[in-house]
Length: 120
Image (cartoon, rainbow, N blue to C red; front, side, top):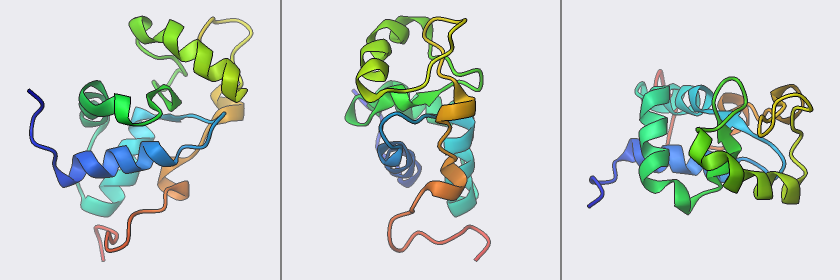
C-alpha cells in the first residue's frame, strides 16, 4: 500500500513530468525546486517519491549528481536514453552526460498555478 500522497509528492512528480525528452535533472535539483516553493524537501524525499510513484512520470530523467541511476534501473533507462537521444558518457556505461543534458529544475520548472515561492 502506498503512503498518502502529499502536496510535496505532487510537486515532485510535477517537476519530473516537465523534464524534456533527452534531458535530465538530479534528485537534489528537484528537491531544490520544490523547496523554493514550499520551504520543504530534500533529495532523499525525492528518491522516496520516485521509488513509490516514479512509474507515473519519466523516472529515467532524474539521476544522481554523478549522472547515474541505481544499478537495477540502468538497463531499463538505456532504452529511453537511446530513444530520446540523451547525451551519455562515452566512458561510463549508463551515465548521463550532465554537462550536455542538464535541465535545471529550480529555474526551468513552471510550478502549478497557485503554488507561490516559499518566501512570498
